Amino acid sequence: MTAISNKEVAEYVTIKEKIPLEIEENTIFNINTKKVTTLTHGFHKYPAKYIPQIPRWAIEKYANDSDFSQLILDPFCGSGTTLVESLLHGQNSIGIDIDPLSVLISKAKTTKIDSKLLDIIVEWILTEIQNRKEGTFKPDCEKIEHWFTKEAIHKLSIIRTIIDELPAKFGLNKEVKDIQDLMLICFSSIIRKASNADNQSQKTYVSHTKIKTPEEPNALFLRKIRLFQERIVAFSSKINKSQKSTIIHTNSSKPLTNYIAPNSIDLAVTSPPYIKAIDYIYNQMAELFWIGDLFDMQTQSQQNQKKKRYIGTKHIHKPEYAAYSPFEILTKNEQLNKNLQKIYSSDPKNGHKHAYLTYRYFLEMRQHFQQMHTILKQQSHYVMVVGNSSVSNVFIDTAKILIEIAESEGFKLVNKWGYKIKHRYMRFDRKGRGGIIKIDWVMDFVKIN
Ligand SMILES: C[S@@+](CC[C@H](N)C(=O)[O-])C[C@H]1O[C@@H](n2cnc3c(N)ncnc32)[C@H](O)[C@@H]1O
Image 1 (cartoon, rainbow, N blue to C red):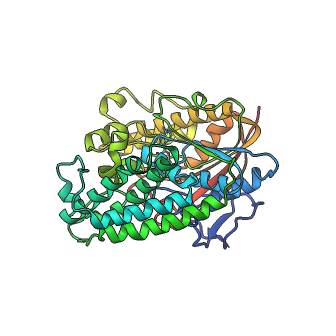
Image 2 (cartoon, protein in one colour; image 1 turned 120 degrees about the vertical axis):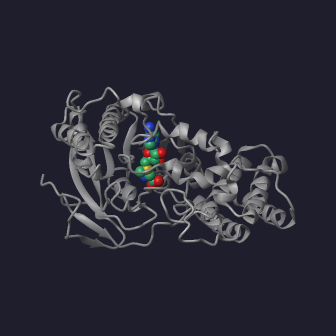
Image 3 (cartoon, rainbow, N blue to C red; image 1 turned 60 degrees about the horizontal axis):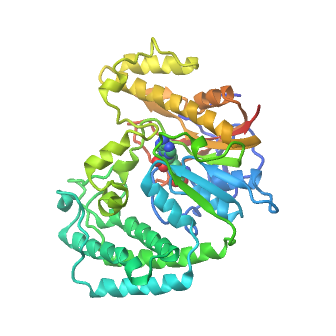
């Protein structure tokens, strides 16, 4: 295979909507579509979300049997893009993620809703918003007025209080709980725009140079609730009664084999975390002030505790890497060893830490491939999307290294192709800090022996 760096690729094959099922190796597409937020796909922003066309391609290629429902897994499901597409293609799915907000987003996007009950509840919520003078919910954050205006705090508190009351008003049952979760995600989806924080930055921060006027929460929520109502009803009408998506919140200490039976998965599609690039919790901080109590993640200290377990995290303390040296602890991959040594030596300030977290990333990804090998059926496909990156200015060919790891753990690469990343809300442009990811590589593996 010819290696293509992600830095300078001039030749793209422009396509409109559908990715062709047969693709010549190393093709790089420029996918010219605006249809990335259809049905429930656009419910909530999520860092490094991929476009639905990617899992759609894999499902149409490898899980297109209409007589038997296939089981599709996304082991890093994020906001549930793969799960939504699986259901739309008549297949069952399982999603796993460490991030509790992502689990709730995925649930809201994949759960069929009783439209009559939804109409009744939405009308009640909207009337209550008009009538209430105070909310009882208060965010557990001393500096909340840094993040939100007094007016926003007042109005958001009323909305959250009303959503909390749904089971008491409409009954403690699954149908109401599902609608309550949908409303929580609708509420969460307006938070960043209603806050003082920059709308688009990956990290949640209030800019003192680019002063923002927050959007008015009630108008925002009204707009969003109508959109959610219309989209979830359209989505529910396309899904059969028997199909379902199961979403599992992992704390990462248990292997995948704890949740999923051996040889049970027909197809896996995912985009794993990047090395050091995205702090999911930092990105969701404003939202977590308002719904983090549901996952014990409302305060910043609770949030910081949880960051350590994410694959690719940079929240690693010195004692963990003090004994690590890339010159003494070698991986099975020569290119990776060279990269780790270069990171270590060329960056006096952070090289030691960065080398260790990169080492750990690939170690965890190796364990991941071992577990995936157990739960996938023989000859089934694992389609994985990654972007290359750079750590301490050292270019890391993540795709190439992951291919070598996968192939040493019982997988065979059958194709590799790429696409240009365009949508700002889908993949974050890291402006050189972690290396700009311009291309996502789609690696198509098959499980052998
Ligand atoms: C690139 S995102 C996936 C985005 C997803 N494809 C989408 O469209 O929304 C990677 C995900 O891996 C999750 N993750 C990180 N460490 C994990 C772990 N140890 N176990 C499971 N999920 C993890 C993150 O929380 C994040 O949601």
